[in-house]
Length: 380
Ligand code: CTP
Ligand code: MG
Image 1: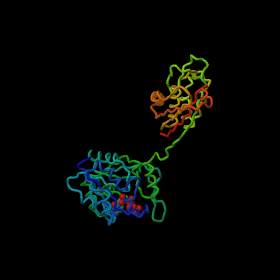
Image 2 (image 1 turned 180 degrees about the vertical axis):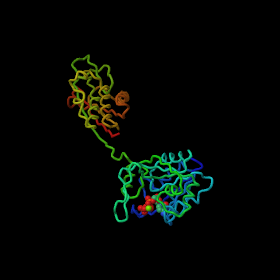
Image 3 (image 1 turned 90 degrees about the vertical axis):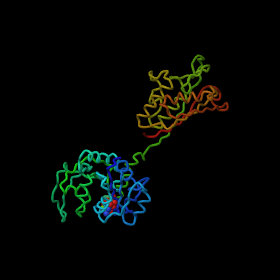
Image 4 (image 1 turned 135 degrees about the horizontal axis):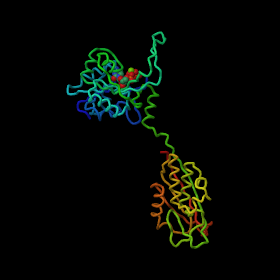
């Protein structure tokens, strides 16, 4: 905040081209009106903010903007509005930023950049963008008069910054201008051009409003995907084989047969994650006969799966796995299992549950273990 800086926000226009049933500055963009957006952008920079309102709407402006700004009645033309506002700025202010409420989402950073140049000694500073279209000067009969060299042209934005005395002098004539800098140029002051920004677009038509919405909400097309995976392994006839399940070693339990460590819970989660991201499955990613994965731990496969899903642009929202079998009893080690699986997935949210099957099927008959998992992932 600069104590010597005042800002004028021009909001007295009707917004004819936008075609709303309210003045343009009162039209809503997502969560607040255009004039509220503009005030929010300049409030961190300017000590005094004067907002020009269309006649008849002053109280409405005061109601939504509160005490942080001074609302005055604007004039017929934009220049009239600025002139009236200038009369309300005391001699303690050295710099004035003039901004259009219509450029509602220009950033605070842009205003700071303009102000920094004024503090640096410039008398007039305007943000601008290069133009992409070739611009023609056209006469009243509809014929081209001239084609200015495009590389020398700029599309000018607001907030524009001025030394207060220069701006007051420039506005002492009754000229109209859609751009304050033009009046300042006319009295022979050098105007410094700095880099503008896309988001300082002037909201004029309905499609501009849509574009501003898109700039503020870039992630509306976030993808949410769900995936499913299952796995099963038979208990080994080799009583010395160790049991790995849910990322843990289970002492005193007989292990399962398999190319890897046979961790059904980890494998079901890998398949669920790969399925959610539409990246195939365990076999197509890690090759069931690939020697590289012989004896691979569940944690290794989970970590590699995490990397693949992450590289594909997704973040894990949560995974849930249910282990099906008579033993081991999962309950007493549930927290440990959750911690181990979560760690292998870069601290993703994991839940672990278990069930027996009332003596039915190969799990109920104690022949093996299975697991089923779901995963929810969202685009980053
Ligand atoms: N403005 C103003 N006083 C006026 C006319 C315009 O304060 N007498 C303000 C508008 O509120 C707007 C800015 O100047 O924030 C730029 O003008 P523009 O985008 O043309 O807005 P409107 O004049 O409201 O729109 P339209 O030309 O479509 O009617
Ligand atoms: Mg206008």
